[in-house]
Length: 154
Image (cartoon, rainbow, N blue to C red; front, side, top):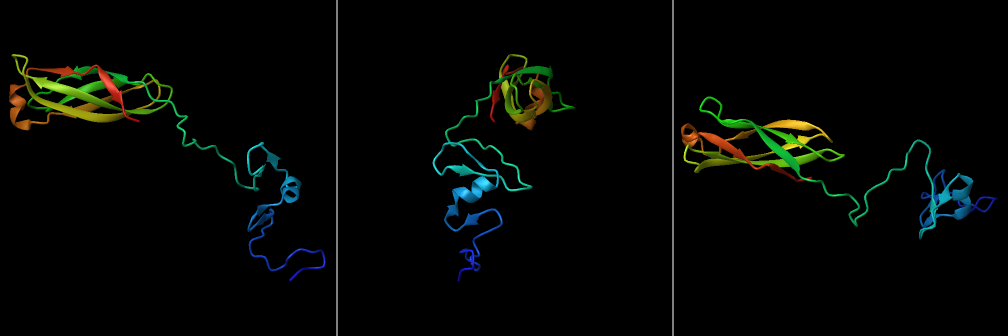
């Protein structure tokens, strides 16, 4: 059914901003202050109270994180069966880094190993505790060797 001005009064798809079941008409979108970006589909508009946001395209425009650095602060002991490691993030955004460590005896043989992840803010450092994976051999640990590269995960 049509009103006197030619519009349909029973169309449940229409809203106050020109939205219909098949898209917006250019004249209604322009009257609401919308602009075109030249892309297919032509018209974009913002509704009051809603902000447009950008989203990453599936093509992967996000840059990969550079690996961080890991430095041993304290090796594991029988009283504290974990190593303390400081991780630095060289990136301009927060990242999650994996730290790997070998717990070695006095002959340089690996008696246990461990790894853990830590989230580090951009251009900052964070400390992570890496647990000894083989607790039965904690007494044999003489020193720790940390991989100096903290691998960027995400």
